[in-house]
Image (cartoon, rainbow, N blue to C red; front, side, top):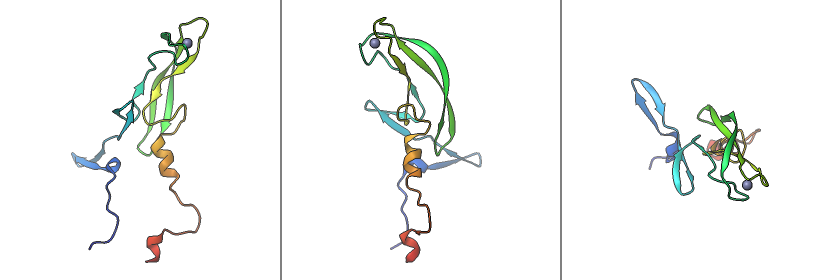
Length: 124
Ligand SMILES: [Zn+2]
C-alpha cells in the first residue's frame, strides 16, 4: 500500500493552460446554491422591517484569502422606511459578515502549528 496523503480537496485542484497553472476559484454555499468565492450578493429587503432598500454609498472591500487578495466593489444600502433607516451591506460569498478575510483562509491559518511541535508523520 502506498503511504502518504491522498488529496481529495477540490479547492486546490489545478489545471495547466498554455503552460501556466490555472486554479479555479472554489465555490461556497449561500441559500442552498453554490456561488464562486467573492461573488457579491446584494440584500433584497430590510432585515428589520421588510421595506425596500436603496443604495446609499459604494465602497471597495479588500478580502484576503489563500487564493488571492481580491478587491470587491460593494454597496452600502439603506432602508427606505423613514422610521427604520437601517443600514445593510452586500454579502460576499465565503466571507462572514464584514470580515476582511475569507472563511477558508481563517480555517487554513487556524490549522498552522506554531512552535517546535512537529507533525506526527515526522516521527515515523
Ligand atoms: Zn427597515
